[in-house]
Length: 281
Ligand code: OGA
Ligand code: MN
View 1: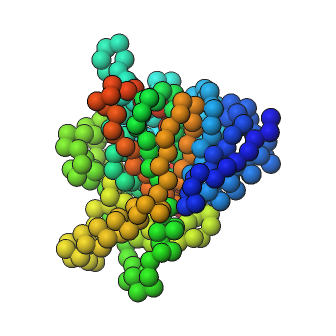
View 2: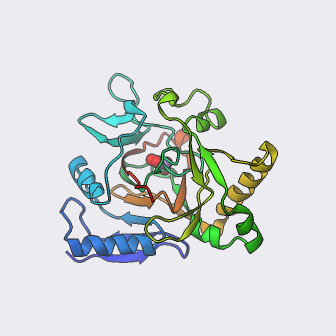
């Protein structure tokens, strides 16, 4: 089957049409996909998939080892590598997946060291309208900083903490995991991408608590500036989902944000995510 790859926005994102991820990809096609992913600045949309959990896991594994998410109650029974993002409930009224899924800018698993390499989110059901996901290009955001600001950020380390987001955004959310099992970690504020060496801004409003060595006031102001800067519209691609889309993103190069605007429409959104672990630089 021949496939084609089309850009989705000037800053990041491309779609792959005509490639079935249920079929094992040849090494040549896999390499082409890896390059296209990099060329698209870390967001690749595979259209028209009908992905069995085993196939999603097998494809994701070619990118690296898989992470079993800390929020155990949302894992797909029998396939703990699949984390469910869902507004659906089972017959007993139990949530079938995380209904809150990242409604703030973040990078998956930045609270681990090393942070996640990639996530692959596959849409089984989407609302008729709404429920988009936004992505932003953190290398382009870095490159747009002035030299004096880059100099100031050089060498700074930031702390990332899994339990932070719960305090900040959704009181009561996240009881599914014990935050004590996930101690805070440190990452450089400007982090070279492990595969390309490109500099990226690696802080996010979801998990970054503060920048070390700065006063609380300074850290808050610098982070607020970086978040505002990195989410300027010219760095953002907004993905409007169709059933069968499988979106692969690079957590070291992008942040993402779920748009929770469809609850009142009664729309249903049901997705399967695999997460590829990063490697130490
Ligand atoms: C995630 C996530 C975004 C979305 O699964 O990591 O942030 O739009 N999801 O559901
Ligand atoms: Mn996420």
